[in-house]
Amino acid sequence: MSYRDLLKDKKRIVIKIGSSSLHHPETGGLDYTKIDVLVREICDLKNRGKDVVLVSSGAIAVGRRAVGIAADELKETSKKQACAAIGQTRLMMVYQKIFAEYNHMAAQVLMTKNTIVDNLNRFNARNTFMELFELGAVPIVNENDTVATYEIELGDNDTLSAVVGALTDADLLILLSDIDGLYSDDPRENPDAHFISEVDDLDEVMDMGKKSTGSDVGTGGMNTKLQAARIATVSGIDMVIANSADIKVIHRIVDGAEIGTIFKAHRDDSFDLPLYVQQMHK
Ligand code: GLU
Image (cartoon, rainbow, N blue to C red; front, side, top):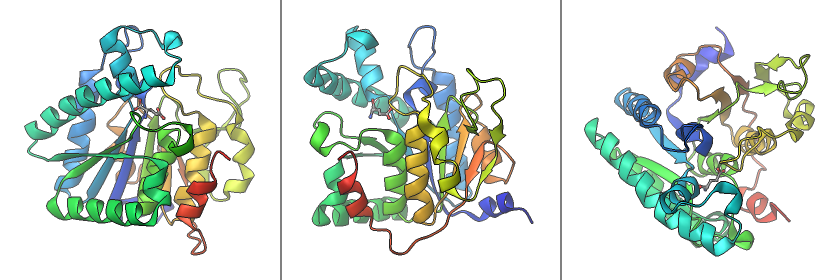
């Protein structure tokens, strides 16, 4: 039996989708077909008895488009926060509607760094997640961009998804992105770059994350994905990075197919999530 076969038995799955994967690149408008397939895949996992959390970016990008501001013009923090407030509700309305079409419940959870660092906040957040699983709902998580500024923000949803995985005792994290997985170098710049399908020792690949994906809608690059892999793997969570070009990879990954890059879990019981989060970006 291969390592990938073990993914069939995963019970609690966190799926992260980036802003660039939710939009048509030509226009910046939401790609409803993709979102529909994403929700259908998640509902099907729910029907297979799994708990699923969706970490979705897109608040700022959707809000920015609603008010007609170009990406390179959105510099002011307060403006970004206002766009997030507008975009988050629009995004949730779309998710809510499609989840309801498949007879599933969506629930919004917005977090900041403080949610993890503060003991009472973390305790409450964890209990809420557990209750939502119990109720059969799908938590849809984003950073609370409307109030989060530098001191309290996690900064990117790759990290957020790993943190959510650790907080909720997830056993699989799937990061859907605009890249196939981890390459030894940036494949758009270096034709000799080779694909890495399995990572057992994270320290051996940590340097490969220096190049970004180059996408202008989200904040994550490969570096943030490797940081996420650090949090996930020491928390005992297998993590897969895969290309969101075909959202149906989700069920194929869960069925054990060799898709994307898998980072194997190596639980480290000494890992202290709140301390780690507190020390990030310092
Ligand atoms: N939280 C941001 C948003 O929803 C995105 C962060 C990210 O893409 O990593 O707009």
